[in-house]
Length: 351
Image 1 (cartoon, rainbow, N blue to C red):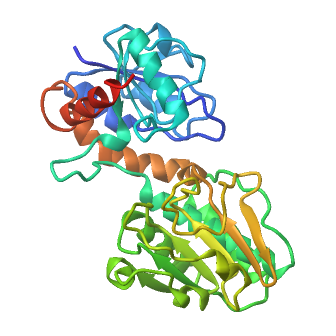
Image 2 (image 1 turned 180 degrees about the vertical axis):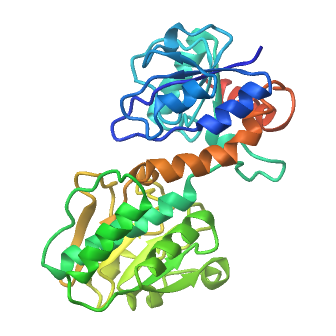
């Protein structure tokens, strides 16, 4: 019997989960054995999983799981160097030359396990079968608006955290914007037709912000684009690549502009193809905005785990997208699992 073991997340500020109780029941009804670890942080309580018929295990007990179990989590494992004998389903961040990624693959080599990277679960066209993009865009736009609101009081955006649900975030943000006694800003979203851009645009429009929506057609001529500087806010939702033009060049820091806040939801400051090269490091929940210019001010929001701010909605959304693939976990020889394992094997050749 195929055994799926849902581990507790061990990364700070990570309350999401990739399987809901309803999804767990669907897997059990399909003949899978589902174990769910207890967690002090998960946005969905353990009772729902228990009622669905899951086996409940102590938090972080997955290293002692049966060797044939699939260990399913979202974010990184503790970097303790231990060999990994299990089959793991997670975001490994190991296939793009990351230093920590190589260390992770070395652990799989030492233990004989396999990584089915969630980023590389793709359909026949290469499109990911599940992604957190919508809520990344939604939360990223919210924090960028918070940065703008703080500017109206002569301040830098303060710490942010997780919210019980999106309504709690919207209520708080609306109050902050109203307290500025200033008309709503104008925003431009690039990548507006994708999951991330749709989330960002929806948040802005919910707050009464006028949004200019650009996608591939509007950026096909190459950058930079002076139109961006004519907006108060810019939300970048395009993952950097060799073909990506520069949207905001460094000389924009000293240029005349209305732009005072950038939300780089794609958050790839270390990339050679960074389309927003006015900053060089990610921001955090404790310090969400980086001031890169003073006159006029320009703040950059570049948090790399934005969906975690809305763990309930993002978990339900992502789990719903992923469930059809989890239901095929009994057959690793076809579909998304075969493709993901092939990707893993290719990268293991260099380890």
